[in-house]
Length: 440
Ligand SMILES: NC(=O)c1ccc[n+]([C@@H]2O[C@H](COP(=O)([O-])OP(=O)(O)OC[C@H]3O[C@@H](n4cnc5c(N)ncnc54)[C@H](O)[C@@H]3O)[C@@H](O)[C@H]2O)c1
Image 1 (tube, rainbow, N blue to C red):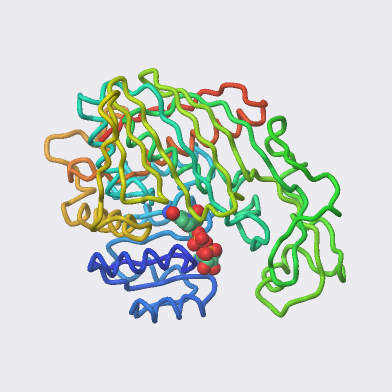
Image 2 (cartoon, rainbow, N blue to C red; image 1 turned 45 degrees about the vertical axis):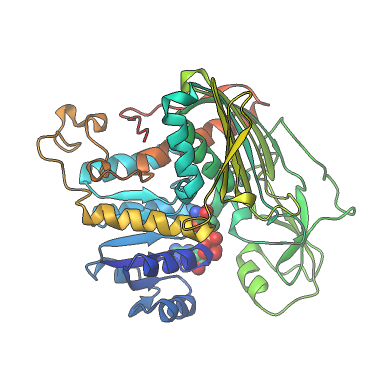
């Protein structure tokens, strides 16, 4: 099989390694930064590289991995579906549930195999956790809770697209890390999130950006402080230049930021306005009556990548966290804690990528996208309702997170945002027409 990569930044490196691990040839790499595409192509042995997306459409590729910032996903994925090219897109699939659903519908109707990189569900311990919950001995799920904590955005923090609404959307913690937690909470529990109540914290609305591209906070900045609840966005409009002021020569604009960040260091400090949330506290109701809650934070010092999940059933509980990734704990009252060890195999961040990428190409090899004989397809179903069709990957037996599942997660994000704007009011997650429960 031959793959292409669209966007050769940080996460594309993990895709490149995963493709090599799955025995898939990387044939083409496209990035707006031609030198980056070339260096990437050299590292992974791709013969074609450059800035022209046509490289991805003209080479007879079996699939393309979309690894660009989120605002670009909709247009790029749409184009790939139109060309009939299977897509593995980075999360979040889109910036709104409506857009994500549009892509899901389009892909189903066109029978184009698709997946979104919710790689964490492929950790061995979480695959086992799902098996334990679906075993009748666990009992019905009553409570799901956990957290996703990272320190990447604690000061000093590099400025980048994640702080720019035009590229990353209105949210940050929720879309960057919350989406992963929603996915594993639903996947492991076997239940879907139906309604949410959320409050946000935007820890430092005004930050100082140095000539080296790093941000810091400071007591000299007015208007700062932890703000939770009212006014999720807390900013004042979505189109304003995120660079609100210059403490230096005053000549740089947001447009010049890239050059400034990547260029020679400048002694100037500029004020940057940040509208998105650093932290979120979210309470959820799931189908089947379970409650759920999660704490998300991008500025948790010392937490490089800590994701935790605990599921309480009527008869058993289980819990796991990514700092102790190879251990899954289970318990039943009065019988102590039973810890299963996953000492071999799929135990790290990159391993979960490898497992997802391998599953995606196995599904393609197994004929994903070709309608199953005897089953109505989305394209031919009465009135064209997508809900009448099987998911594109279904008959291959894979549990890949497809676009329809990603659309539900995008809808959860929409509801979280709406709730935070309304100071934690309960908001129903939109159930799209044709949304099929895809519990695995
Ligand atoms: N699954 C995960 O655990 C995980 C982890 C990190 C990031 N991500 C996701 O991966 C995506 C990319 O994140 P990243 O950290 O790699 O960002 P990044 O900034 O490191 O890389 C993005 C790349 O896209 C390129 N690019 C931008 N616009 C482009 C265009 N129009 N055409 C072609 N290339 C373009 C940039 O030059 C850059 O090389 C995001 O959606 C992010 O949320 C997922």
